[in-house]
Amino acid sequence: MRRSYEIQAYSRRRRRSGGHLEIYRKKMEKTVRYLIAIGKEASQQNYSAYSPDVLGCTAVGDTFEECKTSMQSALEAHIVWMLSDGDPLPEPHTSPDDPEIANDPTLTPVYVDVRIPGLAA
Image (cartoon, helix red, strand yellow):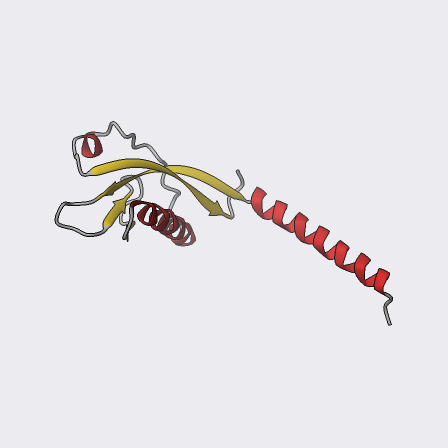
C-alpha cells in the first residue's frame, strides 16, 4: 500500500512528464498566417468567409467573430486533410490590397493564425 507522500510524489512526476509531452507537441506544430475575407451581403443575415490561398475552404457564422473562428477551424481541418492526402501546404501569398478583396466593399480582410500539427516550426 502506498503512503500519501508516495502518491503525491507519483502524481507530481506524472504532471511533469505530461508537461514535457505538451512542449514536444508544440514543437511539432507549425503556425501559418493566412488572409481570409469575411463578407455580409445586405440580403443575408449571416457572415461568410473564404481564403484565396486555400481554395475550396469556406465557413459561415451568425456574427463576424463567430465566422472568423469558424473559418480558422475550417482552415486547420482542411489543411490537415490536404496534407494527409499528400497535397503540399498552401503558401500564403494574398494581401489585403489584392483587387479581388480591395475592390469589394462587402469584404473585410482579416489575418488568422492556423496551427498545423505534425510540422516542425
